[in-house]
Image (cartoon, rainbow, N blue to C red):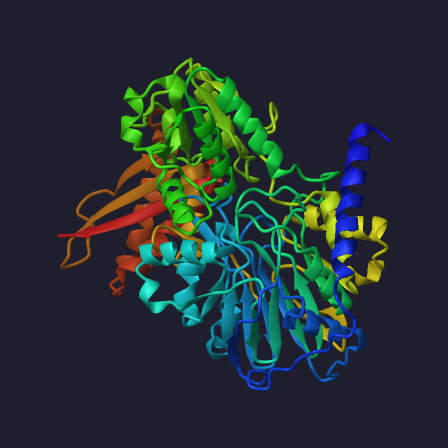
Amino acid sequence: MNDKRRDESKQRMDILDRFIKQTLHIKDNQGPKQDKNNSNKRHSFKTHKRKNNNKSSFKRAMKAGQHIKYDPKGKLRVIPIGGLDEVGKNTMLFEYEDSIIMIDLGFQFPEADMLGVDYVVPDIQYLKDKQKKIKGIVITHGHLDHIGAIPYVLPKLGYPPIYAGRLAKGLIEKQLEEHGLLDKATIRNFRLDDELQFGKMRVSFFGITHSIPDCCGVFIQTPAGSVVHTGDFKIDLSPAAGQNPVDFEKLGAISKRKPTLLMSDSTNSFKPGMSVSEKKIGETIEKIVASEKGRIIIASFASQIGRMQHVIDAAKKHGKTIFLSGRSLINNMYLGKDLGYLKVPDGLIKDIKKAKKHPPEKTVILTTGSQGEPVAALTRMALKEHAHVKIGPKDTVVLSSTPIPGNEMAVFRVINNLTRLGAKIIHNHIMDVHASGHGYQEDLKIMYSLVRPKYFAPIHGEYFMRKAHGDLMIREMDLPPQNMIMAENGSVVEINNGKARVVDENIQTNYILVDGLGGGDIGSQVMKDRQSLAENGVVIVNFLIDGKNGKMLHEPQVETRGFIYMEESEEILKGVVKRAKDTYLNFAGNGEKRGDEEIKIRIREAVDQYVVSKIDRKPLIIPMIAKV
């Protein structure tokens, strides 16, 4: 066994040893305590004593699971409408009788062929006639792939209440405020020892480590069976400041309830070993801030609150000043400070407008743009378009992130442009400047060992990630192959009498595209038109028509953009004019009254057939009819 594998094995054993020691403190003689006032309410919100009380109601409720009695008529339907076979758009529905809850409501960044699209949000068609059944939206953490769709979808759901931790609540409120929806929304803060009751679904929480504070997993109990939903997680014994540690004690108590189904994050399931601790990233950033003599620019996700604290601590220690660039980063910095997740010494952070006059050797710029976003601050720096930062040979740029799948080329372009300007580039292939918030294989095996479910469903990630996760549990954790559930977006997983299976039913989960302030109002024809424009250009056929008798006043005029080089297209353009003219005369010149839209459709079809027959291309064809 090499040193790395030996270290990983020892770390895993240390974690399991900690788990065993903590769970031994749970007393076996604690029975369940029923809350008669709240148990039958359709929607109640209860606050219980905190976890430093060994007699908390959570532990008592968990201990009751050693002899579970199921209602044989009860059915819990679990329906993913986002987050499977994709990275992002994480949204899961849980339906029991007349109650529905949602776990997360995120968006996805567009794929390469989604031209002009800003985001993709979950398809909520299934919920259109079920608004009264939606009792709440429970948020695991504040990343946009888990909360980003809320402003676009919440109004269409009838504004059900949202339940979130403090930081996620603040981030959601900021989003809704920007969309003018904050006054209409209900957002309730929960803590990890709280329980929510939605009809016959009881929801409790356990702390989990990710890459943002206030992350949690969710445990849903029903008379039909129970589900553990991990959210995004990693096992980190040295998490960043403000982040929850993994609550081994609660996971041990949940395990005693014999959960029916574990739904677990699969994003890094193909990576062996254990994820890098955030503590190591802090140490690396501190070394860079200490050793680099020129100006330092650090690009990270705007939501990386813990990473911000590393930069703050390093700058303070070495007498440097921080300048912030990027609206989302500035907003999150001050939100984190206001909520107590960030400790920022007075005077350490200054306005980016003053960066030019500050000594470069005393300057640290914290910026957005680590994903190569077109208008982000780092991209503008790389293109020499930033108003206050001009990159030069003495600058060091640290990319404290890894590219989201699909963003690789955009990130490489930014790196190329920064390198051309002479900057020194440091990224994760050079030094440990970023730690993923998603667990590697050893992390995933630990989670499975802690929960010990009867059935297992890998979630969050592309198909190959989820399949690798399931195969890992079968191969190394003795999961029976028949108990591994590979659901898809729109699948219905039914839990009944403590058993789980995918039923023969499929829910509509189309891509719902957001363009600008709109949400879901981009039809498939719009996307086809954009694709035609991108690949084959546009042909515009202009008609000038007598408004009284409908006769053409002269030959149709043709304009093209991105179609074919004009000097080589004379023959084809003549053919387009002839085909368009003949179609108009045959269709509109026979004495019958035809609407303009009907005429345009016939012209478009005729010209399209002609162009395809000649050069096998399908440009966007736009007939224009002007009447005088």
